[in-house]
Image 1: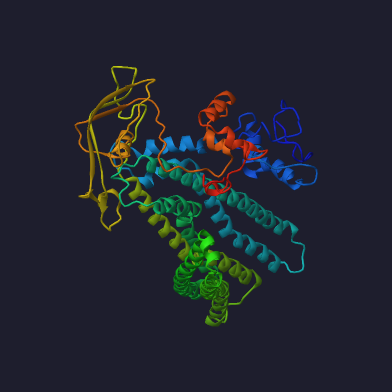
Image 2: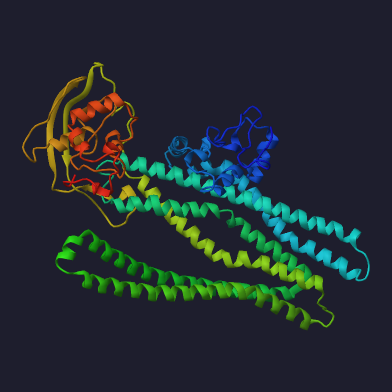
Length: 584
């Protein structure tokens, strides 16, 4: 194997057999860290130096210069173990364990363990390198102090080499830790988003009780993001105390009991920073309310722009929006002022701790003399101690948010759902031609009630008194038959269809519903995707010219498409079909 990224910007790291072409990344976008075409040494080199990104950066730097353009073909494939299908099946296998406990934390740990444990090892190397670095500096300064007017290359060279080695190892281990930790967070978030989306599609009417689309959006957009952020810094749970213990021990060995004064000052700033941070969060909540109020006003104006213009409401809306914006800016100024105070404490705390330690060390005993080696070593150690102490409160806050997100996701996954395989009820039929069989089937609709505990499925009570029921159905539909359900308004047509596809609760357990094959359900509430007209017709299916033409004829769409101009069915449809006329 060989690497050509140092000699040619157009070239890509690849095996000898791969020919050169004008688009080096296209067709060779397999994830390099698991590409078996390279030798093991090359894979290790790429894994630790990330040199496989050089062709992407080189092509990006030439954009708009020689016609080079970055597109999705230039990106590498997602690793096999991080693809959505694999993550979804893996989550189900771990979550649906034999004892039925459904431990979400244990499931996520089993999924991320192969990546997260190596990240922890890299973090351990980082902590040891950062903690021992001041001791090497102290050794080098001691050599200079003992030999002020002599050549100290032989005595100081080992310390210089050791200092370089520590910095080198710290750089590689730290970046590898961040890469693996972020990859673990992406894996966790992707798995949960897939599972939440799949689970919400299989919720029964009882499982959907009390659930709003906003709650589901919060689970996907906010709660999974909190877990992603916690995963990136999860190893700080043990590395922060370890760093504090190691650095404190070194300070005690160098400066003696005087070190306790400086450490005490650092810990005094910890509750102060916590109080200031809590104050900032309170101000932020007030600011967010004003932000929501301003956005609501603007949205109302835009959605009712016709009424606003016809009735000359522009000035009224302008005054209300300006008032809300001024209140928002006032809270924002307060929030930034508090944040500036927090940064001030972060900068001052190590300086005050270092100064107090050095003063106490000198004043306690006349024989205590500050030397360059002690002074610089103490400065470096206190700087190293500043991060774990100041970051501890922030990390605990993120951990608390992640635990709260886990509880919400766990409660959601406990909601009642019905997962089906090839046959909707897992049953088989004696007649292979039968597509749908109903035997004494009855369905009922109503409103489920839930209490305010918000603890998932345990909070569901029962159907309300206002229910609608249709019964009893006995029918069999064979392949190729076209059946229409006809009846007046509120006769139960939609309830019947909803019961067949499990969108409506069965009225009893005596009936039987057998549905073979795949189901396509088009409800009465139509919607339009913000893409081309052709993609709206295909709806994710591959384009087949002959079949597509038949659909256009069957739906009488040719006359409408001709009115769209030269682009015809490739016309982009805006949000809610705003580019189409007639309110389509």
